[in-house]
Amino acid sequence: MDKSEIAKTIKQRRKELNVTQQDLAFLSGISLRQLSKIECAKASVTIDTLNKICTVLGLRVVIEADYES
Image (cartoon, rainbow, N blue to C red; front, side, top):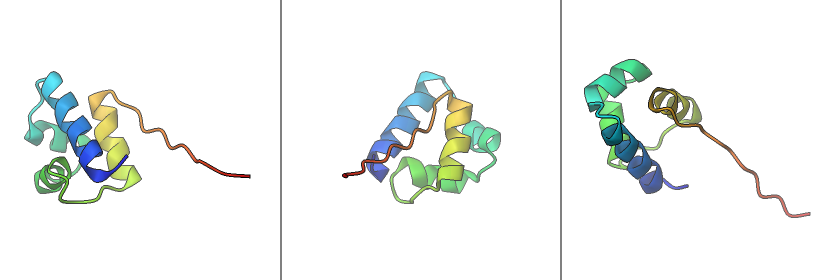
């Protein structure tokens, strides 16, 4: 999943739950500015930050590895 897909998913879920950016930022423990940049796909997001956001939104971060033998 790239930055734009992550941004779209976060924004869509936040709106479905009627949560403001300010509330999501506060509940996730990140700055409003950082969240805004993430939702606009203007900033990369760490796994830790993504996990914080997803926890509040009731989403799960799943990391899959594609190994070729």
